[in-house]
Image 1 (cartoon, rainbow, N blue to C red):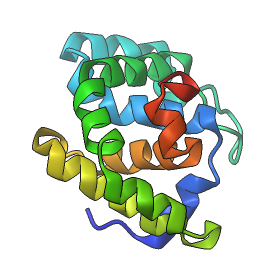
Image 2: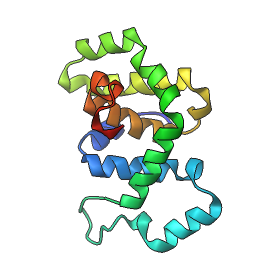
Image 3: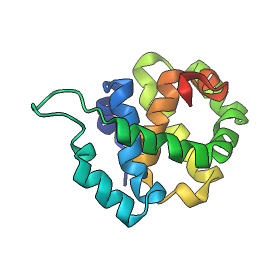
Image 4: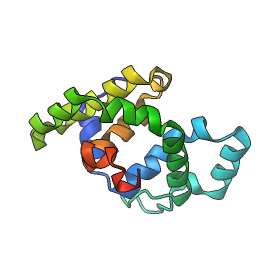
Length: 146
């Protein structure tokens, strides 16, 4: 998947709850067994509780899936982000209107450092937006519950 500025801007406007739910949705095949995925689908968690077009997407069950994914991959992802001085320097140089460039750079850093996740580009894009919105230093220090 090619990452476009438009994709990043769309995710940038999402709330933390929406991003956490989307992270879980994209992590579902990596975290849950087929039977668990069926149970989650049957429970209505994939709908996220949204019944009206345009309402916030929020699923506590999918947020938990996202947290499970982060727990499993935390060490590798933190190594890709937190020890990367070039990335931290790029954050300081990036203007608010250019955050899409920093998000793309975070995706590349994770993909390069954790090749096993490279095929999950949508998941990495959502994760990168979460990381950049929270601030790299805050995310690395365990902020935002990550």
